[in-house]
Image 1 (cartoon, rainbow, N blue to C red):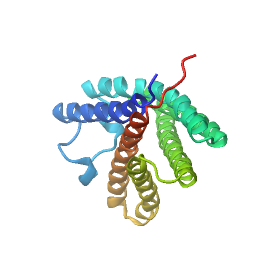
Image 2 (image 1 turned 90 degrees about the vertical axis):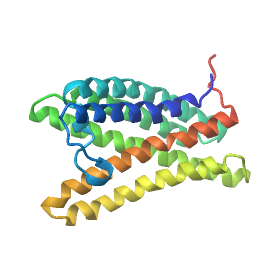
Image 3 (image 1 turned 120 degrees about the vertical axis):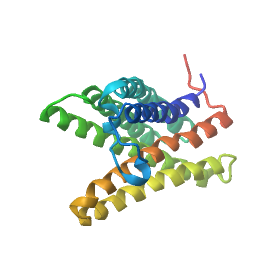
Length: 224
């Protein structure tokens, strides 16, 4: 079974689902008609809390949580068999499971009312972003180590693209700390929202060069 469809689905399914939910919420008047990447007018969560967008959001994120369960096995397999990195493989597997569980919790409680549900949503979202980013960072580090040992390879372009998107996420995370701490009350939400949208976009886009590299290498997951 080829490996490359799994990162491709992780890039496309949540992106298309959240995009469709945002369009539906805007069309139905639940959100202002604005560009959240520039204007910071809404959070990602608010796109899927009401109307048609609620169902579109859940339809996208529920299966995505399941995809991350498969991702836990796929990423750890690649690290173990292709790069001979058993420690990285074990860490990738655990991070994949945590990412799937966190996204499932976030998706399940999205739209629920009450202070306790809000805590679950925030905890699920924070854990998801942290674990998904750490798994990509760990994967990139193992990829670079393998390239240094084996010399130039045909996947150098994909590796650089993947690394650039992972480092963009790191930069956004570091920049968010002073921006949200020093910004006044009027600008705090703006910076949090803008950074959240760009971070999520970079996280999803990073799976595309990975899918390209795996397809080019014709990597297979053993079925027996």
